[in-house]
Length: 144
Ligand SMILES: Cc1cc2nc3c(=O)[nH]c(=O)nc-3n(C[C@H](O)[C@H](O)[C@H](O)COP(=O)(O)OP(=O)(O)OC[C@H]3O[C@@H](n4cnc5c(N)ncnc54)[C@H](O)[C@@H]3O)c2cc1C
Image (cartoon, rainbow, N blue to C red):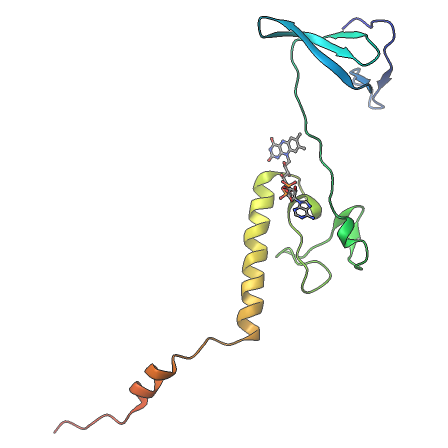
């Protein structure tokens, strides 16, 4: 790609050579539903054939600030069932340490739900079906 005047370019330290342009896009350019580039807020145009609109990702974890939870960088550390260092707080998906992928987040939900169900089960034993218990504990007649 040619480097039009007015570009603010930054190259990645890995040296792969792709330019990083950190200016907001003003509008998409093209004809007959075919993209030809983008115009930036400074009026410069970047010729492009393809665009990928990325929504970005932001960790909405501000509400956890006051809670002392073990972290690895920004991510919460969990055990194999997604339990954090607090026994009643579970972390799933992007919030926790690990791969940021949909399939992982879904699996995390299953693990955490199972762990929570087990906790509840241990804390309160199965409800007794009292009426039925009385019926079956009545003395059984002897048939001669
Ligand atoms: C541009 C992009 C492309 C990606 N492509 C892929 C891909 O191709 N394949 C793949 O597997 N993964 C992909 N990912 C990663 C994937 O989207 C995430 O790993 C996954 O969505 C994480 O799921 P999550 O449930 O942890 O978080 P999210 O999907 O972010 O869900 C969290 C939800 O909680 C809501 N929320 C946040 N705070 C609060 C609050 N206080 N109260 C109520 N609700 C709240 C948010 O609005 C959001 O809906 C991509 C991510 C990005 C950003």
